[in-house]
Image (cartoon, rainbow, N blue to C red):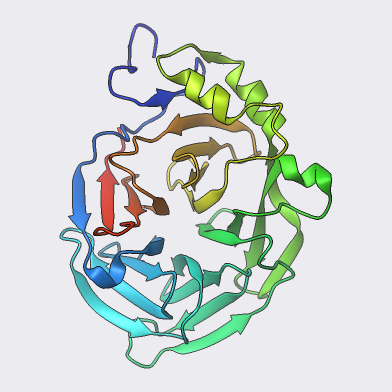
Length: 291
């Protein structure tokens, strides 16, 4: 990034000298407006054949398959009764959906009109407020991003946690797969070059705050680098973790473009998809090319 200024098109960006970010989040390649029933897309995934996006909203127990080239809904499948569904991921022909309480729903034969659904209750609860679900192929586990509490105790107020679920054994690991703290963010920002708008990040991640405001609303594993990408609707932020859990990159998203980022997934070629809830208007899905 030496000699290159990006402050003219990014709202607020942090640039460590040793990391190259491969997306321009202010310039989507495509933008799709969703129908009214998908005003509140709370989770986004990709079908195994790469042809369709699969989405869930946070009210109905229904899967929505979308043509990724047009954004049109091509199929709807009811998998469970109404509830607060927050994340979705596909492994092979099986869909996994997570509820805010941490309960995971395994939906087999999801593309058929009568799918087979099983649910698996976790040790997590509404206070943890799970909002993200992403599949890590390397470790063969589903990652659950907690918008709420990382754990019990005051020390966890300054941390956010990511837990895991084994899709084969159907077991949750009670030890978090990743934990990052407000101090970790502060240490990261101290390594960054000063760019226009970075003071917004310093203010949002003020180390003197009493709790961590960054609240994961979506999580996905990058198909090329294996890095873990996290969206936070609170603060309109994207954060990237290494596989070892080190913070690699943070960017503040433009509010006019990203009204309420809640869904995140990747295509095999690195194309990134971000869904935004409409907040009274039409929901939108954007795609961003991998450079």
